[in-house]
Image 1: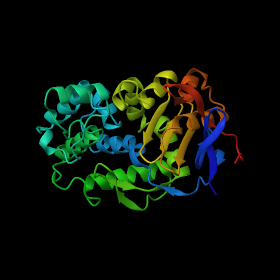
Image 2 (image 1 turned 180 degrees about the vertical axis):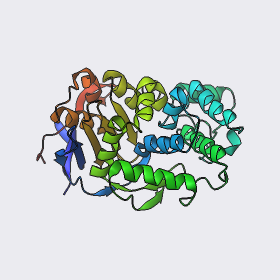
Image 3 (image 1 turned 90 degrees about the horizontal axis):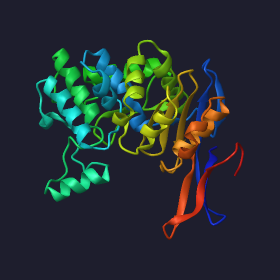
Length: 313
C-alpha cells in the first residue's frame, strides 16, 4: 500500500495528495526508512543515468570531469552543455547526426527563447539526454562496437549497463522497457535503486562518476535545476531525478534514498528525499530552502507543498 508522501495545501485547504513509496538506507546498507512499498519494482527513468555513465566509463569511453558529469546528468540544453556534448562526439570522430535521442527544445527557457529568436528549431543535441547518448557512442567507438544499434538491449554496451545496475542494486534488473530518449530502461525494486545509489558514493569503482557529479553539478542539471542546487547545498551528496516521480540521493557517508511518486509528478520529490535523508540522520538543513515548495495564487504564495509524517493519510 502506498502512503501519502506530500500534500498540496492552498489557503489552508489540502487540495491534492501525492502517494508513493520511499526506500532509505543507513550507511551500513540496512533498510532504515521505509514508506509505502519499497519492495515494488519501478522503472527508474533518468535516475539510471549515473550507472549508464559508469558503464560507458568501464567500456573505455574517455570521460572525465565535465564530460563524465553530463553523461550522468539530464542537462537543460544551455550553450555550455552543447559544447561539452559536441566535444565528447568530436573526440570520438562523430558529429551530432550520430545521436539517436529525439530532437527537443532545451529545458532552459532563456536558451529556448534565444534559439527561437535565431530562427532555429528543436535538435537532438539540445535534448536533455544527449550527454548520455554521446557517452554511449564514445564507448562504442572505443570498442569498435556497432553505432547504428547502440540502443538495442542486446548491444554489448547495453548489456554492460544492465550488469552495472545489477552489481549496484544487488538484484537482476527487470523488466526491460524503452526510456523517453530511446535507450533501454531496466526495472529495479525501489530498495534496489537505493542500494545502487549508495554504491555510487561508496564503491571505489563507482566513485569517479560520483566525484564528477559533485564537482560539476551544473552539468548534471543546469542553471537553477533542482538536482544541481541539491548537490550545491549539500556538498558530498549526489542527487538525480527522473521522469514519473523518481528520485535518488546519497550522502558521502552512505545514507541513500530512492523515491517513487505514483502519480508521476516530480514537484515534491526533492522535498520527500530531503525528509527521508534527515530521518536517516543526515544533516540536510543547508538544503531547507529546496524543501519549501510554494503554492501560488495570483502570483504570490498562498500555501505550500508539504511532506507528511509516516502513517499520515
